[in-house]
Amino acid sequence: MRSAALSLGLTLATFTVIANAIYQKKQFYPSVVYITKSNSSMAVIYIQSMVFVLMLGRLMRKIFLGTLRAAEFEHLMERFWYALTETCLAFTVFRDDFNPKFIALFTVLLFLKSFHWLAEDRVDYMERSPVIGWLFHIRVAGLVSVLGILDYVMIMVAYHSTISKGASVQLVFGFEYAILITMVANTTIKYILHATELRSESPWESKAVILLYTELFIGLIRVALYIFFFIIMVRIYTLPLFAFRPMYYTI
Image (cartoon, rainbow, N blue to C red; front, side, top):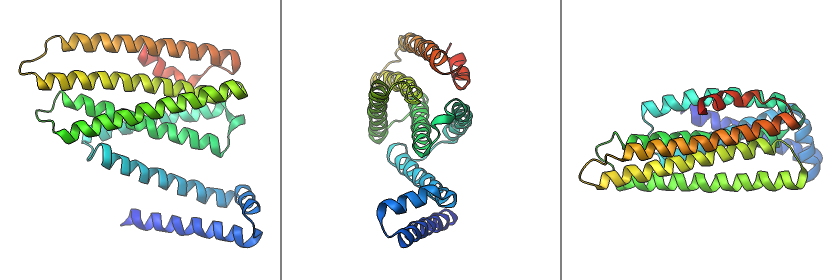
């Protein structure tokens, strides 16, 4: 009830801000300029956008994951705070590009990262669960497919933006989504191997070895991506401190 009341209050505040701008400026474009120049109005818009993101996150969680287990929620919170800290460090590197679009892109990145982590934890849960229903398979397959498509689209957007406009913050987004798509590949392979073992009557002894070599191969790809990213960032901008921790754990 508190969340619903808060959401309703923010929606009314957003409607009031937009109505006030239209009432004062009478036309669409001057109203938009008025809102973007007002710090209080933009603060309301930002908060409302965050509410929309949280609502979309809850909807996607209901569709693709259902109820989160306690371990999944704890892992999500632990990783999220690390990712948020690294994002704040990235803000210092690209402070000249700081604008609403920049904030929106980083919000989308954190949003998709969260579901990558949840998908990885949910697939790992398959190995410890005695009973896996058809709904579980549909949800996991759907989530992994959607995440893979979105990662590819965002990589292409970053690539075309870099080619047409030159080096910018899109380098970071392209790199981050390249790392995420390797996570999707690793999660997909794990899911296929776990699903194959569930269909067999006897334990699959060689599955652990296949998983080991899969994680080793994908880990080498991530290390190569990190090294390539570090070289580009040092030559164009500065030392990317926000990438040190994930690179260390990858190595």
